[in-house]
Length: 268
Image 1: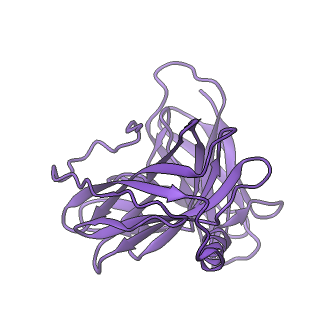
Image 2 (image 1 turned 60 degrees about the vertical axis):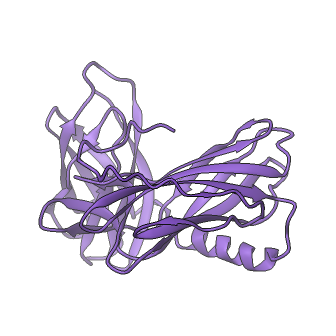
């Protein structure tokens, strides 16, 4: 499992390694102190081999988990799916996160149980038996990387109607795609910050979440202009050591109770 996105912060050394290998269209719960995880699928891939699912993260009271970019501390959720005929490609969709200040650092994520939307592209002749390796960070006063090995059997559709509704709910909770009049774009990039222009549909308070990559690590966005065209200055904590090719950067733009997700391109 690729751990390059782990933040350079100390975690508890008590790595949780639960295992739930029961085979079903919904996996068993696998948990440790602070929370538990399972995967629910909608039962069958479409004609292109795409399977929709959700990673449910159940948190104990007072615990938290993280968005795709945790901020100053934390670990992003990671999911790897394997089949008897090769690995699947898995994309994780996140509902709109929250930014929190815990007295020590600023982090981005969820302080409540959350379901992440999974789009899984299976290899040809994948079969029904899938195995999933999951890693999420759950934190209270300490952070515990919760690792789990989960088993799934797509042929078992004994409760498929309920599971499809759960998956549909996870996808419905995602921010919609950025659109004309509600989107963010890169104005300029320098060694120490980037400037983002945003368009929002109303004058409601706006917020911006920008996801770091292996080449770019960003700090907390600061809004430097408000109104229907807010501007954000985002610190560059770490940039490419050498000129890099154009790279897409994911963002979520929030305006009041509404939000969109999109990407802008960056290079240096």
